[in-house]
Structure formats: structure tokens, C-alpha cells
Image 1 (cartoon, helix red, strand yellow):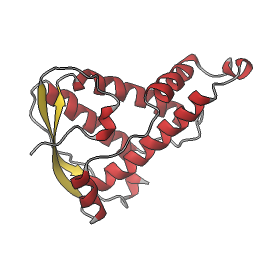
Image 2 (spheres, helix red, strand yellow):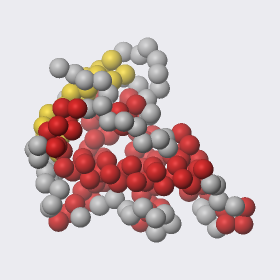
Image 3 (cartoon, rainbow, N blue to C red):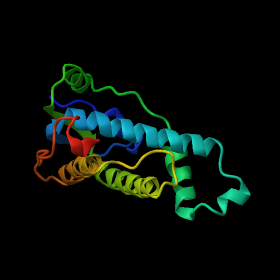
Image 4 (cartoon, one colour):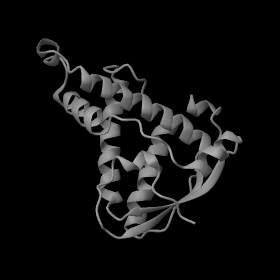
Length: 177
């Protein structure tokens, strides 16, 4: 049974009547997702705050133009941290399960939207790594999860078969810290 798109995608999809596709996330790593979601939310919250109080003219000159563009795009367009409606996933996470298979019905246009989101998050993460933001950079596992997650939506929207997650499952694994 396919659910509605995960809430995290809702603000990235364009409304419209395009055809629906099923995206299946095999061996979805629940604890890795929880850590990655927390990082994603922290980063978007920082961009939302920066968008509310844009840098002053003098300090704006010291910020790279790409960061100013990201503040505008991620802070204004994607700034709200939306509700998470995936109750089965969240219940499994609360029970301490490590993984599960998930399926979603999404518009076929999810591919380009996910590609754009991934590029924006990678650019934002580069600023985190350079310590130009307060949010810490994503860990290698968080970045790998984000890549796998977006690739699944992009490739399956183009009718490819699902590829299961083959990385770590437990949040306490050293690579996640």
C-alpha cells in the first residue's frame, strides 16, 4: 500500500496533474533517517532565521553570493519545517526498529524537484563545512543517506527499479556521530 508523499517532500513538489509513480524505499534506515532529518531541520531553521533578518549591506559583502542565494531559496521558499505525516515510519522508529520498506505515491515531477533539493542541500552543507553557518556539516553517513534517498525518487520516477539501502542502520554507529 502506498502512502502520500513524505511530508518532507511536500514543500518541494510542484502541484499539478502529472501522472503518479510509486517510489519504494527498501531497507529504509529509520535511525539514520532520524539523525538526517534532525540535521535537515536544523539547517532549514537556520536559513529561515537568516531569511527573516537578511545580512546588512556591510556584512553581506563578506558573505559569498551563493550563500546569500541559499539564504533566500532555502530560508524563504523551503523555510518552514513541515509536519511529518508518515505515522507507520514514525511508529517503527519509536519502537526502536532499525529499518523497514516504505512506498509512496508521488507525482512523476518529483525527479527534478529532488535533484534541485539535493543540489541545494549539498551547497548548504559546503557552507557548514567551511563554518560559515552555525549548523554542523552533515556526517558522511548523513550525506550518503541523502544521496540514496534522492536517487531513489529521481530514478524511480524515471521507471527504474528500487535499490535497497546498504549502509549502516543503527544511529549509534561511529560513522553517524
